[in-house]
Image 1 (cartoon, helix red, strand yellow):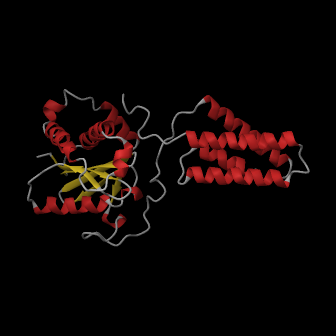
Image 2 (cartoon, rainbow, N blue to C red; image 1 turned 135 degrees about the horizontal axis):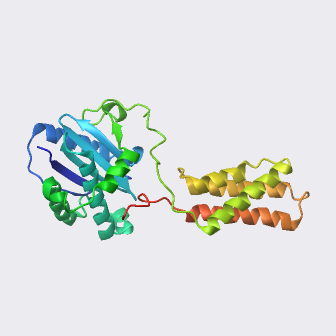
Image 3 (cartoon, rainbow, N blue to C red; image 1 turned 60 degrees about the vertical axis):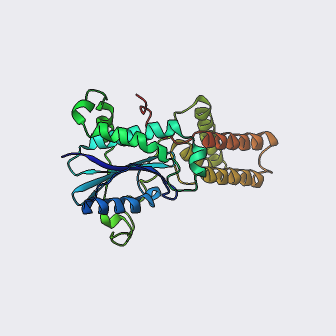
Length: 281
């Protein structure tokens, strides 16, 4: 029988459990899968934002967004589209119910234990897929899974906790920050064009334009420590213009520094999306 057996909500940065479903299942295989889930919860920041792991006759699925992870154990034949639709419902309700500041400041495990009522009710609905199919639209989730299927983890990808093999350099290293940025704004487009212009002018002067190129890249794509890199690039722009002080007049220097500051601000303002643009469709 295809069932959702267990679900939990955890904080990504440290694996602190925030809420979980209450269950009395004593199946040894399920208890082992829950141990694996607990181990995974402590390492969510290392993984892509949507993953699956086979654990005996069970599957562990999880998603993460905005610093919170949503995890579940289900039977091995439970449909992927239902599993991730279930997690998506938990996510939408949780981010509406609790603000980020409260989540980040939580100190004790299960600080949001009252959320288990919603988990329990949602689990009951998803364990009755016949009645469920008439109440929700799975087309969007089906399309999303086809376009970006969950990453299939293996025991080799994870450290030696609760029976897992020793951690190795993971083959998915580098796709973990698989984040989309917010939509482009007019000011951001202008800043990017001006930065390209400054880079071209620097090349004409025989000066490396790598700082402007880097800032354009940081504006266009998500990167780890993105804001810090943009500030360092801006600092290099300022230093280069100090070096060119005798070759440029004050207005030229002011133009390059202002453009560098402008695109640095745009990089800071263009934040990663928590979900795809069609999240609430």
